[in-house]
Length: 474
Image 1 (cartoon, helix red, strand yellow):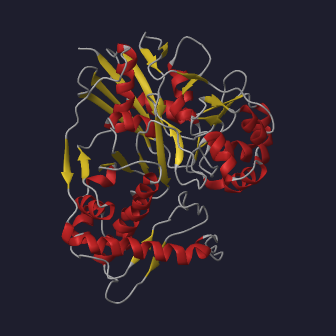
Image 2: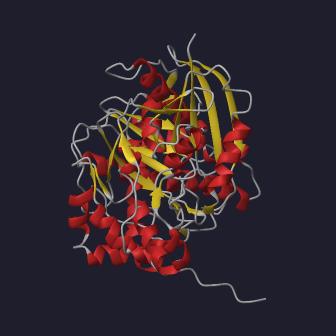
Image 3: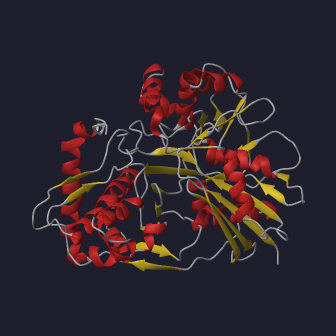
């Protein structure tokens, strides 16, 4: 049996899986936590990988890394990190995103150039922030890497130049998915001067070896690795409910969306991965349950004990929001009455609020020649029966729920197996999943839920653009 390993360096933790390269069966797993921060010393990722992979990799033939997208790792000419990495969910560069939009021709020009419209999540806006606010680090920086690039380079023992892949590169704001090339002019405009960038390796390329001779595959971004792990096919729309919420599908042509709602990413196979991302997802129900003195184990009981929220709407922008672009927003409850101010109504409103914006995201993909035939629901919150049933109703599509697994790490392992095999397509790994069908009798109610959510969002957007009032001192 040939074994391969996949690493998921996510926002909250590093996960490692070891799989049979032929079947994809997971044989061993490890995990280690990360600091719950938006600015992190990359050395903490390496510590987590060391801990999570301890005793797992002795007989592995190949490894690949799936890393959180957009994170900015600046290194000097010796490859040493010059400051803590800014992660995708660090919103401080929102003003820089606005500035770059204005300077370089507006959203349509950016989308045509890179497939993206700059927001605070993207690497290019973080480069501008560092240039303006951390002058010493900016002066010492020689190259910019993404988290998966940095980890892949640390894994390699050959000392060659850093590499990335087209999937992760497509989320920087200075690489064009349509043209398959960097845009150094955009990087230089953002940072004030040029920086070295990693070579873009091929999807099934072996980029080096570890000190023990394990082949290192190119790796990719977390969403691209998840698409590989889920084996997405035409018509499959993945909805991932992790720290962030993501909606994505595979496509044969690049996406150009001047509204910025759909990010025109590349995938890890040579195709494309149009994607919509929200900052707020799985933490939303947990936060609301804490408000009412309940735990996540109470979610299904509470949310399914009422058929609707009796007009209660939650806009779940607890940590600001990326889609829609409301970086200063906070959460908002609308429609509270004595009738619906119960734990059950609040729990259901939390699930509906989390999923309503993602339902809008599925609709956004439809405008780019995507015809969804089913939703593939993954992530921690996908395990909830309430989430599954409400998702089927709000999406008005069959919802396939794969067995719980670390799909980013699994996708990275599948990429490692592909690199070993050198075949035309990735190896075929079977997944177990069950399906939840929408209830036709509840369809009208779910349509009203979505309409109500949209109306509240439209009416309150001016308020949501304002930062929340600071607490009085003392």
